[in-house]
Image (spheres, helix red, strand yellow):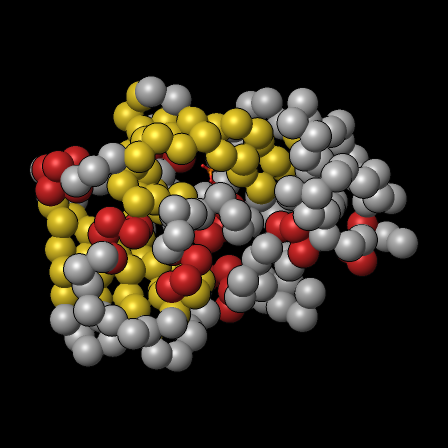
Length: 212
Ligand SMILES: Nc1nc2c(c(=O)[nH]1)N[C@H]1C(S)=C(S)[C@@H](COP(=O)(O)O)O[C@H]1N2
Ligand SMILES: [Mo]
């Protein structure tokens, strides 16, 4: 069995040392997803230059399938209920970082009053990057608009002033410098997905490329 066809490791299950396993079990007993290794630094992966986004002009837009637009300014975002989240990050280039500490607004809060039955989301960014994921994966306490990392304002290199954080999917779904979320009846691929990366991107099922 090669890493690419190793079975997904159930994050809640007992750690099984599969042939694709490259790391140590964590103290909690949870292993790395298949084909991943642990890092202690925080690599930066950006497809283009880091945009300079001023919070005075920052806004987040949610557009519905009926072409209604909902907007939050920076002050409005910070006035919403805030969550603290400690999560593991898994990049498709095979590094994983455990126990990262974030603060931000849950997408459950942002989408609560948005009337939509759309099942798909296309996330847009300052700088033009896009990525797609199901709306269901933005909900359920699993996704945030994160503005604080390790107790400090999020570094622009890592997506500051604010990025999407969806840690249960590969990190390319966690759009840096997030600007918009478009809710769609039909799935539309984002930047990396059009280059052949997976539409869903579950690290535990090793969904790196279309067809995985
Ligand atoms: N806007 C934007 N978001 C992005 C990217 C990007 O190039 N532009 N790269 C993605 C990829 S491939 C990864 S692995 C993570 C990297 O996040 P980091 O630089 O904070 O480690 O951001 C994702 N979000
Ligand atoms: Mo990535």
